[in-house]
Length: 75
Image (cartoon, rainbow, N blue to C red; front, side, top):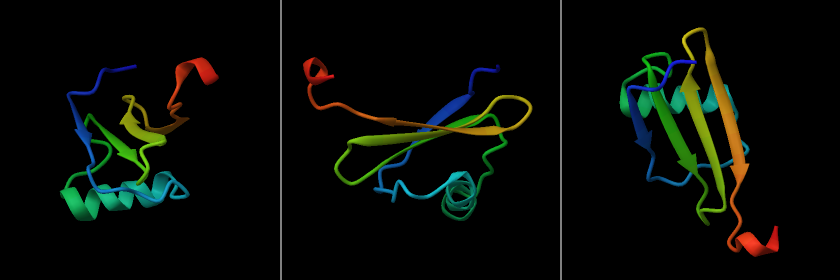
């Protein structure tokens, strides 16, 4: 897997029900770039409890998601 050349952190909250195609479209219309340009794009929801990352690995784009814990001891 190739390391991304740049990582863009999107400040605007995103609906986490959006999938890879919808987030890719957002990147194209809002940033004027494509998800296949060697960058990684990080998205979060309004409450900052979920994270999605779109990243190009050299052969395709993948979408990674995570729920963020407010308290690591609670996990």
